[in-house]
Length: 376
Image (cartoon, rainbow, N blue to C red):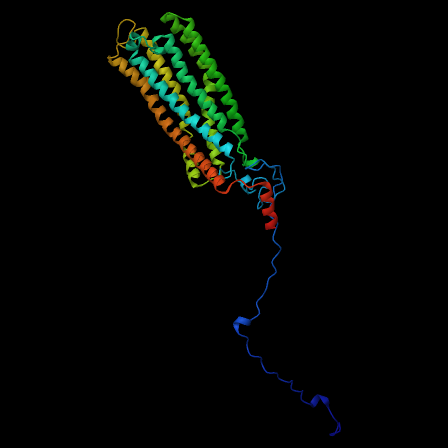
């Protein structure tokens, strides 16, 4: 039995903890906000390979993309975009001249071939009567040489324009340069130029060394064989450059108008073979008309002259020349459209470049260095 007066701690109540007043809530404008620690900004990417400045050729290797060229003040980022806004003035002038040579050479080639060929076939008698070159279809030495000049000179002009147009863009990154297309195209252009000149030389020799009509036509047979051998490189020389130019447009970073131009150019891929196939078809069609007309066969005429009013002659002209001529004109108009708008694009870029230089001037290297030191 436990005594009644003995103290038992387990029977005592627990002490009541003290209570503290609840603090009033803070207003929203002084509530503590959660803060996050931002990582330090990454350094701007730098150019790790030897790269010439698009404006002056200065090597901008190891420079940041946000920097400026210390020699000419051109943004370093513009060196890699491959556009035309910061392209050198001499490069833009070269490209403008190349496009002029190309599209005027195309106009002269097609216009001269069609006009002079039809002129010799339809009005050969009158031209011969007044002592003018009647064209190669009449066996005239002067006509053969004139025909050669009308055909070969525009072809050489176009090939020269193609060669100049394939100049590497100084501001396009190496991994975007169409090196393979440029190499193959320049090889094809060189071979085509040699083939065109050799064909012209053979034609002129055949025209000057043969006197009679029969001998002249025999000489033209040799020329035709030479042109057949040179046909493949000529076709490659006329086919590959437009494809390479379309590739150049596809890799060019400019404004929205050039993007539309690139889409149009890609749609015309299939017209390029039509162009280079239909063009010699016109010439050979006229040549065959002249040959058949000179022997008096197939046109309903008598003697050595064709009857230009007969149904057979008209049918031969329509079928032999009309169809490829229509294809040629359609393809030439569309292809010329591409080169013409390319010329406008380059001219606009050159004009903007000249206006920019005239407005702000070309800063000296010391001014560029002072500006960079001030910004840093």
